[in-house]
Image 1 (spheres, rainbow, N blue to C red):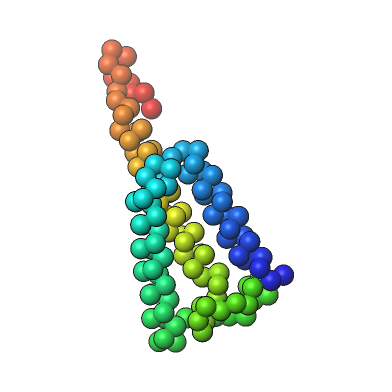
Image 2: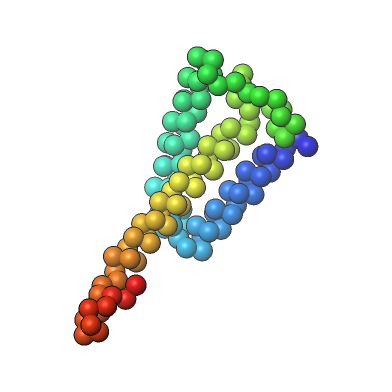
Length: 119
């Protein structure tokens, strides 16, 4: 079924965006920095892909799940969408890890209870 991979990527991207919107981990906390980071990450990995394609390391396989639209030889339309998803997901996961770290750092042993800590 052509386009299924792209649909799965967009569905997953929407899920990450909804999580981000609810918890304000990246784009909903600082949209400008998030956009810059996603663009830089995507461009970096597209350059990485171009080098890999030029050296023959990366080749596009045949899959009925791809739309069949190539932006360049061995670079399907789905690749930049995947790289956007990857970069955004990394930022959201980083934001979640930093929030969890801050929450854990905020918990201190409760004094007066026999040295037990509130965990």
